[in-house]
Image 1: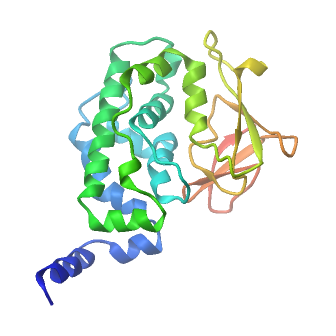
Image 2: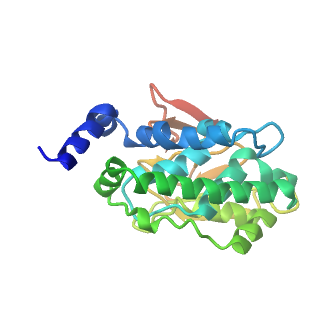
Length: 249
C-alpha cells in the first residue's frame, strides 16, 4: 500500500463516508464545512435577531445548497445565495436597501467562497459531486455586486430570480406563483405580480413553497391547498406520512 492509498483509506474510515452515500452526501458538507463556517461568523446579524446559524433551519438556504447534490445542470452562485438569504430572513419586507443589505451580500460572497474552497479540498466531496454530474468549477463565487444590489432594491426582480433557480426547461409542467408587488406587503393576485416557471412536478427542490406567496398549477388547473416537505423535496397538494407541511390554505 503506497502513501496515497493509505490516506485515501484513512479519510474514508475517519469520516461518515458510507453513511453519506447511503443517505445524503450533503450531510457531510454541512457537518464538515457549513456549520463550522456559520459558527465562525455567528456574531454577525443578518436581520434583527437573525444569525448565520439560523440559516441551517431555512428551507430557502438549504434548497440552494442541496441543489449541488441533486441531478441537473443548475449550479448555484453567490447571487443565488444572497437572494435566498434575503428571502429566508424576510429582508425584502423592509423594502429598502440599507446597511444590512450590504451585510447580507458581503456574507454571501464569504459563504459561497468558503463552501467552494472546502469542496475543492475534499476528494470525498469532489467525487460525490461528480456522481451527481456536478462540476464545482461552475459554482460562480464572483457574481456582479451591482446586479445583486439591483435585486435587493426591487422585490419583483428578487422574487423572479429566486424562483427562476427552480426552473427546468426539460419539463412542460407549469406553476404560477403570485407574490407581493414593490409597493405592497401582501399578495394581490395581480397578473403583473406573478411568475410562471417550468418544474418537475414529482420532486420540487425544497424552499419552493413559502408562506406569503400563492401558487397555481397551470397544467392541471389546480390551486395549492397544501404543500409538504420530505428529504429535501417538496410536493404540490400531496400529504406525506413522515413529512412536514410547509404551506396550507
